[in-house]
Length: 322
Image (cartoon, rainbow, N blue to C red; front, side):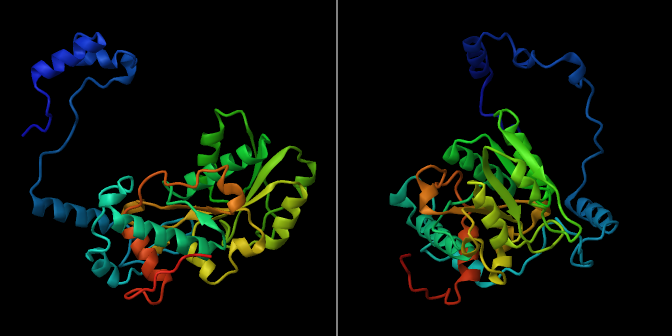
């Protein structure tokens, strides 16, 4: 069965509008040596049962959960998701979602996002929070760009103990901007070395991850004082949001912007995705920032956070933040 809705006449009409003779002309900018003209070497189709057996055989060759426990760092891990999440997903208060941009038909989504942002701000110790970004890495890049816009300075520094993939995304974001990204080295004790800050001028922000890539807990209060002495913004990054259920939150340690990954709030791993970029700051940054939804949250994200962070989740007393 074909799933293309356009008829031959539709396609011909559209090609005439763009001045192309055929569909292949639309790809004329691609070099010939980059185009594969051979048929795809694919195996014969399998039945559902054959495919299931094939995937089971492949997975048995890898050490994956639940048969194996993986303790390597920098991964995406299984987290307990309360059974009440599925129950709440079906309640009429939340199953009214169409799109957050049409409030008359999406009060459930708006309520869920409001609860998520309130709880995220409280967890991170900040005043305002966004309604999510693509993932933790893009949230970090957005935070650094926001700091550049706020301070109007052209250099940022990031700890080399921030997740390497996060730093790669930051470099991708900053490469076409002309702004400079400096990486701070680390000490033998597994913490960031801030001594090099004294030699940096025109510094917009410094980003530090805690717990860092080595699993060490940075002294955020001391780091914040050194960074603020350089008249730069202090950005705290994280890959495990629930760590601030045990550690002092970044806001209490002087962070200006907090960002990171919220997958551990109850999003299934799904072989690495989807993820949830969290970003929070103070009202001082709100007028100069991107404190609005860059993309709608999946409904289960705020509800799961709502369950994990509110003990009275079944019959909550709605609160308005001070």
